[in-house]
Length: 171
Image 1 (cartoon, rainbow, N blue to C red):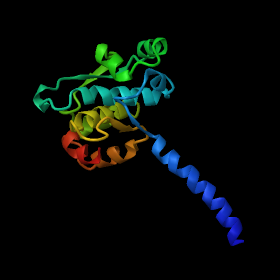
Image 2: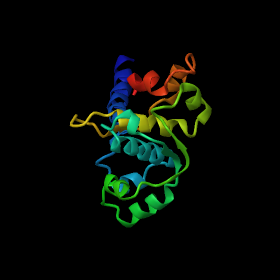
Image 3: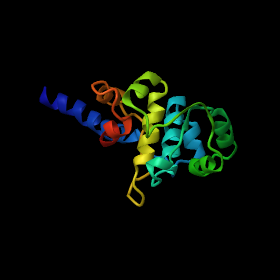
């Protein structure tokens, strides 16, 4: 009986290792081919992260509004035409616009909660990119499976507080 359980447990442990690491990607080194293969939700998260990442190091006072609910179709088509190019280069040339503008660094928790579950991840990933330090190993690495419920729960007890101050330790 114990041998049988061991034969089942070993393959499960071997499979669990790669799956746990698969959700993390270095967005700054991702190719267009890899980006085009992501789900629409993953593409939105990666793009939001890179937008915030491009503004890291700028003072909070200099950050204005940013686009959310981006029009990613043009970026995906461009990536399919040049699959070996890096996504970072494509985005630096022309960041896709969005349907709505928000100011993540000045947003309150109440404003974040009012955005709804489709936009909240974009704001959180933008802040994650902005929060990254320069010249740090894995600075461009993004966890595509971050649980938004944790950030939402962090905001609920203090709706008038700054979203940025409330969640930056969680990013």
